[in-house]
Length: 210
Image (cartoon, rainbow, N blue to C red; front, side, top):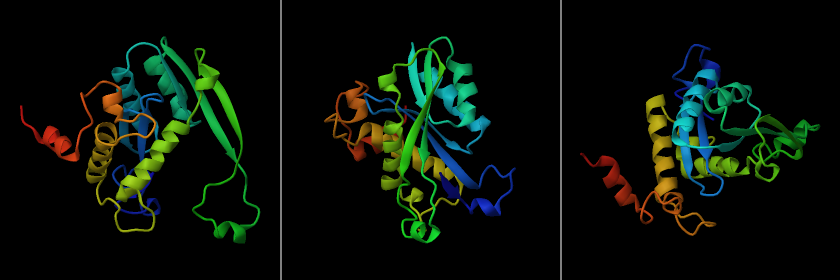
């Protein structure tokens, strides 16, 4: 999540272009490939756009793990029921009891005290119910995309520019960044390309005219 234009507190509930904007990511656990993404408000409409795109891109049966965001439960079923194994994973965090002590670790990760898993559809394999892969992808978004940095001036002024920045990150992640556990890029590992791309090739491919 990142503010676009202005902080969320300066917007209204009908202001779709400014304030909090979320980067939805769907990542393949084995290939580390970002299959689908969407940038927008964290609501039913944005979730529907994201899941609908994912459903069109993935053929056959699919196992999905998401967090406990409520719209996922109905929208994922709507688009994929019949070929879906779906579970939600909710991580439970300790409640700070000392506000002064908490201030010293304001941006540190909270302490996870438990996990609540619920099967939402089908029969997902328990050993594959996991949100860690997409959480690691979220870390990469913040690390490699300045627009997601905290307490800086790199934030996006418009939603259009913010969406472009997310798109560039996803393309570089899939086609150019060698993943340590794969030994190659996600796109090459998934046999989408014949070799890892350079940034120069990515730019050439993106700007080529038919």
